[in-house]
Image (cartoon, one colour):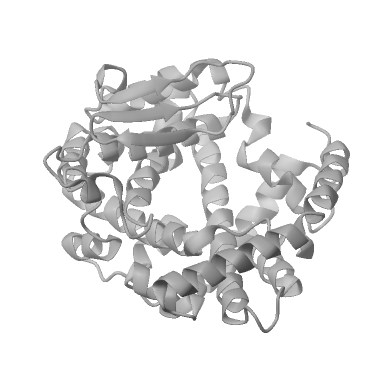
Length: 378
């Protein structure tokens, strides 16, 4: 919907309807929490998730909070520019969260990033790294545009490495390309694991922080100006500007998820004493992003098991991996088959290593966010 007012009206209707389910959501959360506490023998949900992931969530949150603060000036510059470009003059100083989907698709640039070319360009991008996805027998592709098909790209690792499904449906906009590359990272990881590994290390993991590293590193290709220039015949200036738009989205999502983790730690630390904390949700996310979030969206915006922490660990790790690849392969890492060779070696281990172990192999401390800050332009 290109009109700001139209999106605002629809978003309000959606938000009001969604909030009506909050009592049921909280009831379900409470039942799940009670069961998790009983089965694990650990009553504290934060401690329980820290034991499961093998990390300190509070230490991670503190490091990420400092990183987000360090990137504040860059984010203010990016958001001021791209809020204007993507939302137009009709927007208020603080736009509402109803418009995040529109911005994430970079919808005004849809004429360049057409849905018709999404599959072709993404497959060619992967071939440059040595991954011929449409000839990969272990990966079952479903890329068709069918009326009843969900537009959300996903991977279903049914029996890795032999049966891995990659499903996408292009809608138009750069997000189609980013989603395809992101999910291709998951698919290649699962399809590239050693078939001799126990099932545990082919399809199970303590959390999602490992496999998200590989989805992020493939998606990061869309932030390379050279990629925009090569596949869309853009001038140097236009390619740099469009890559700048993807950097804005990266900074937006990173700051949003950092604030989300901070809120979730407060929520679960007070669970059973204070059932909501919706105002803290609104204040943290609005302050971090410059986008107005509804307080009554706090339950709809919560994933199980501190998934926000897994994403954020992958953000740190993929930036470290990208810096390592630039050192080992060169600035053109994103179109060099040597990169594919390095990634294949990591894929063979399946889900056995932790995200933090990968950091050590790359020569980084797990909490070293300097590569991430560099990537965000800070």
